[in-house]
Length: 338
Image (cartoon, rainbow, N blue to C red):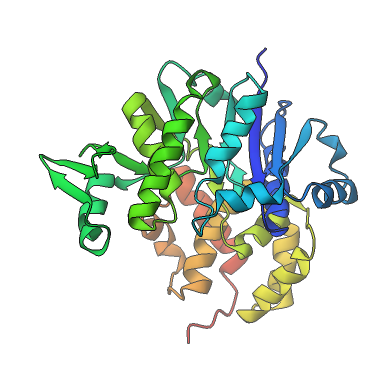
């Protein structure tokens, strides 16, 4: 059996440590496999204290790799940390010869990522979601950026340093799968990310560089069926509630957040007692639309609304789950639409 490594970064902010631990804990809800976790951080003492405080010892294979703060500062010397995932993957493959998946620190798992490892290699790569065509996006804002970007013969040239083919897509990170065999590509990805950022000031220059290089060298699969971003803090609070694990002051923050939307204590108790982990993605979708965005959704239109937005599958099971969550949490709530 090959070793399965999931690697994370928690750099510059303590809150990212909590994100990583929530992500690792979420995997225990959908997989019994014994993964190896490697966390790269410039806050190793704080991370170890938190692991000890919340008794994460049941996850025996967490390795902490310390990174000096001066190095992380160098990575963001251009003003934004767009290349952390590139540099962390390079550090990992400098020390390990096993394949690894880089996991964004704000991901929670919906399926076991073990099967992804069986596809790595042989010109097979993973990123998270296919967003849009790179060619069209750069064409749309070319006039606002460096004039050394030229378009000719359906190719985009960055001062002849590299080219973007019209068929290339941009992918989000989330999960990045690049095997040990292809570690040499990280140098090219690093160079392209610097060029993209220098020419465009694009904060996701690292993702663009991964997208270009991996498509040049093989097939890029998406991994969105394996994990989702919890992203905003309030989604992290709901994730914590669904797992029955609140780190730091997240329980208090959840209650303050719900109070902001005038949701009473009975709603809070329903979250604590009844929100199940497998319901979380659909619960978040309904909450964001109904409570945050003030969409006047009623039960008969819940399923068709999310189906049209591409946020659920066209199955009876999805319809039943959405209606069940609506009935359980929102049906009798007095939600203000002012």
